Structure formats: structure tokens, C-alpha cells
Length: 70
Image (cartoon, rainbow, N blue to C red; front, side, top):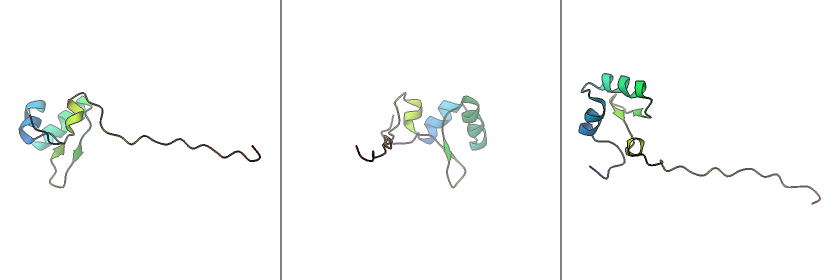
């Protein structure tokens, strides 16, 4: 297994059981896995999607109004 942020082509083929990029995309959509399509039309899957790790996300800061006269 690689330390890359994204799945390698061989890992993606093993995950989906498909070689063609269009079939991989169809399988990923059917399974509801998050992915993006790169400029060459290949699906790109974050490793955290299949590693059961939560992806890194910025924590949204909640907006708090300033109270007038408080």
C-alpha cells in the first residue's frame, strides 16, 4: 500500500474489478463512493475514502453576532 493521497491505478482496478475508466466510474457511482474525474477522464479516489479514515476538513467557524449594548 502506498502513502499517496490517492489510490493507485492498480488499487482502483482491484477495488472496482474493472479496467475501463468508464466502468470504474459507473461502479464508484453505484457504490456511492466519493471521487472526481481528472483531466484525462480517469476517476480519482482519495485513499481516506476506502481506509475508513475521516478526510481532513476545515472546521467551519460559527458566526456569532455582536450584541449591541451588552
